[in-house]
Length: 410
Image 1 (cartoon, helix red, strand yellow):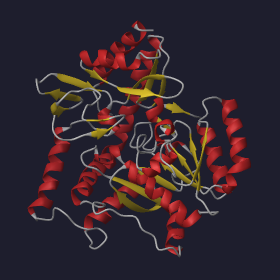
Image 2: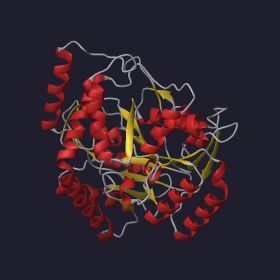
Image 3: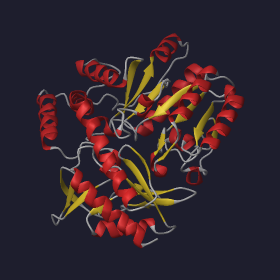
Image 4: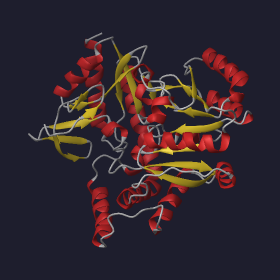
């Protein structure tokens, strides 16, 4: 291996699969021996549209126009460019007109840091920042994410101080749990500045609560002036059966964080979108506010989002119809095979026996199928989040193979 390392559990250059890929096509990845693997984790939920040749050609042409002009870099904090407005207008169009402005970032993790800063600038109620978040939620690995991600607190407890006073509450899976949590929120949330919400606990294993719960939760938070931050980095862009999860709700969040699928994972890119009300409060804030990196608004990143957002806007109905079809396919397989599963849209998890998930992941790798390994305090298993344009018969065959493997080791 080269002289590089990654911090993912250890300081090493080892990866989960240990495969060197050289090309991709559709829903498949190909290694150096030209062996193909079906990617049912969509490049860690980034490559929502797969390796589509027509889309990649559009990206290539768009990048060439920028690079042919020699404008490989531009500082968004010092200069202007028409693409900033083009991309932000498309984001607002797809997210909805209750939102006002877009702040560009480089990742979902950076989104968390920025959203925390915004809540501090306009909604800090006491001497220290007070934040609510769900246990087993995931919001990245920057220091904001280290602070508010419930999933990795056992790993991140060596860091102190973290950002503010963070209270982790249970993520309900039953009606009685929803009622208990809503009662606690109503009684105690008034002193908190913001709540960070991952509407489906993706990294933890596709946990979901009811639409009614979230509508009641958001109403209580708004009544008590608690800023509502929806982290849709994992759930955004059709995966849940709606364009965004919050489209299921009658209530709307104050801030939405997006990344990953926004540009099909082509380049580091993300954004934080603020509602009209938050935009007005930011405009009137007396603080000198600051958040930037020299790569925010990177022109090639912007152009990658520009191309993919165009595709989403033009093909929205077809994409939603396809997600519905694929969701039904997954559900049918799981029900017929009588396997326990959790699902919303194409986001699916299957619980395994303790200490079996990694083994099953490696067994599936031998069969040319790549899935996501999840682990939380209560259970472990595998998650499947395929591309939204994957071929249905291919997906069905793979799902049945996965279920067969899981049942064999039960």
